[in-house]
Every structure is written in structure tokens, then in C-alpha cells.
Length: 494
Image 1: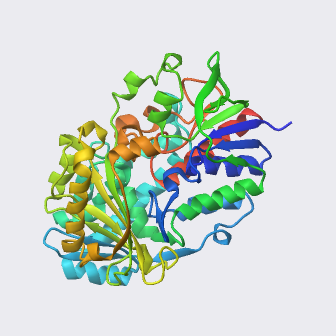
Image 2: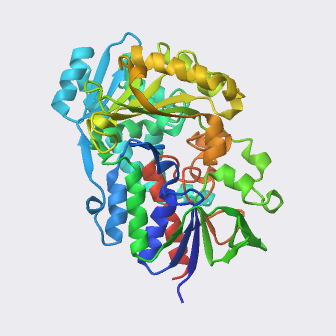
Image 3: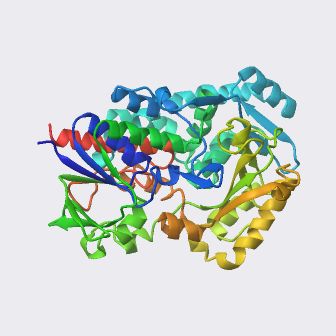
């Protein structure tokens, strides 16, 4: 008889695990409280407009391609991919703009236009960061469950390139002479919800991956990746139950033996994979008195990522001169980042991101219209901002900035649909602890062995996947967390 596996949550980590386990004949059930798969990699539909909830950058597509191939499929048979030659527009405080390109000749022309003599330093950056990446890549595919895992030959080879004494920003200053150019390769710290002046230098590989491999768009949005993963899992026998909330884990003598659903139904299993926001799960679906290491008092001592203020806007026009991805830096970027991560106040000079995906993908909006996605990094709920008072005011501020800094002229005249998500909404509607949309912070003391383990420490027969565990936030890492959990389960039943 095949082993029974329950997966709590149909996010990308849980779906990654489901695909691999079902292919090998395990009896897998996935319980998802939302009416759609993907979690924050799901979609929002407003009238005729479609949006990704969360991730919009598809990097390291080979990670997901390999998972599909391991099940005998090809990713491109399930989704349509576009490579974006113009990766993004970066707009600085003096309103100069930099169009970063995957075409190296265009990249050289653009860099030399803005910063004479800078391209040779860019080439040096690519060469050195590639060596770092090649040493680090394997470290994100294996678990770190005990201190001796840091003594393996594989990990020891990475130590010379880690530069543990440096922050991300200071590491990149070694390549680039101007603050603007350094910021252009450091802003990706926001992908993990941290300040580049605080994030470890290891994360310089994020911008390297963008510039080395490029950025993809998925027709219909990145949420289609989760739909494709669910389809593959179901083709191999997985049972995905939507609109089904797990109330709590069923625990007997430190063994997880199943789950209790909100309707009172108890379902037993040999193993449970927990694909929920880690801190939320520990404080909501596990009794605190049964926990040892991850009690609420210990979780609340941890550093959490920032949050985001979101605008999903359906327009009756397309801004053809605005690229697919746009990052608009505040006039004082470091001060803005400090306000978010240290001072925990609502910035009146925010940086923000615009996705204008409809110039690439006409499936997202009705003919002649566009689905505009706006993300503003802000402090998480620990800032104690009263969003019942600030929500409308801040929305109007962002619209003003979209018109002026974003160059979306007369945008408010063209709005047909609109949805706002604040940190309170991340907590109440998406079960994100503290509204920290990138989960636990990625400081050195919360990585690898120091992050919640994929083989959960507090209970047996329980495995963690998602951004709150190793390897961390970001779709490629989350997919890998699912694969790590699968290996634990398969090794257990060899």
C-alpha cells in the first residue's frame, strides 16, 4: 500500500512536492483554504482583468523545468514563456532612466551612456559573481538540519566567497563607482524584503542571476506556473481540495499523524508537509503548548521582512511607452529603506514597482486595456500603522507618484477596476504573519541551520516547505524546499 501524504497548502512549495511524490506513486492529498491554487503565487481577477497576487519576476526557470522533466513532462507544454529583452526600467531621483537589457550590446550602450567607463566593471562583476554562484548553487538544494551540515566539503568551499563581514550594498560598491549604479544591482534585496545595507553579501547573486540568465514572463501571469504544477500533480493522481481549511495538525506523542479540518473532519496520514506561512502556522494550527523550539514567544524574537502596499488596477488604455517591469527609486533611497526596515514609519517619499505586463501579454485585460500591478515596499505590521485611516490617503499619494515619477499620464481617468492590499489584508486575508510578505528575514542568523528546518524540529513525520524555511523566499528557493521535503520522505521509505 502506498504511503499517505497530506500537504497543507497548495502554494508553489507544496505543489513542487506533490508533483514529485505523485509521480512516484504516493497517495497525496492537498488541502487549500482558498478557492485557487498557488497561495501568493495565485491570481486575482477583477472583472475582465487578471493579476498575479505576488511574484511577477520568473527567474531561474531551469529549477522548475527540472521538476517538470523529473515527472516526464516539459514546462513549455503547459505554459507559454516570453523572454524580456528589456529586463526593467530603473528611474532615479534626478529622473534619469536606465533600461537594463539581457542583450549585452544594448546593455553596454546604455551603461556607457549613463556612466562612462562602467561596462568594464560590469563585466568584472559578472565574472566574479559567477564564481560565487557556481559555488553556492548546490547549497540551496540540500537541507541544513544539524550543525555538522555546515562542515561538509560542499559548504566549506563556499566560505571564501561568502564575505560574511560585508553587507550586500558594500559588496557591490566594490564593482561600481556611483551610488546610482550600485543601487541598480542592490535593490534586489527587496525580493527578500530586506535592506541592501543590512542584507548579507551572499544575495549579490540575485542580480547576477537576472543579468546572466534573463527574466521571463508567463502568458496569463506567473500564477499559471502554479496551475500547471497542480495539473501535473492531478494527472498523476493527486487530490487537491480547494476551499478546505486545515484547523490544526493532529499530534500524538510528538508525531504528526494527520490534520483536523475546520469542519471537524480528521484525516490521518503517514507524513504531513506544511506549506503555509511558517509563523502563522505555528501560532494558529499548532497548539503552543505542544511546541518546543518554535513557540510564539520565540517566533516573535525573530526578524521579519518588510510588507507591501499593493494596487491592482484595471485600465481602459495601454501605456505603450512604459516597459514591462519598472522600479522607481525614491529621492533618498537609503532613507526610504531605513524608514521601512528600521524606523518602521510610513514613508512619504516611497520607492515603488510597476508591472505593465499588458505591453507583453494581451491576455491579461480586455482589448485596448491593461492590468497594472503596483507594489510599494512598506513596514510590516510591527509599525503599528492604522491602515483604516491611511489606506485611501496613501493610495492617492501613490496615484500621484504614478503620474509624475511613473510617467503614467492621467492614469486616474482610465481606472476601471481597483483593489488595494495593505499589511492588514496580508494578515487577515492571506494568513501572513505580521504582514511580512517575504516571511522571516534573511539575515545570517536566520539562514541555513538557523532557519526553520525542512525536516521539522518540533515533531516527527512533518516537513516544512515555503519561504519561511530553508532555502528561503523567492519561487526558485520555494520550489527547492519542496524537493528537499520529498527527498526526506523518499529516503525514509527506501
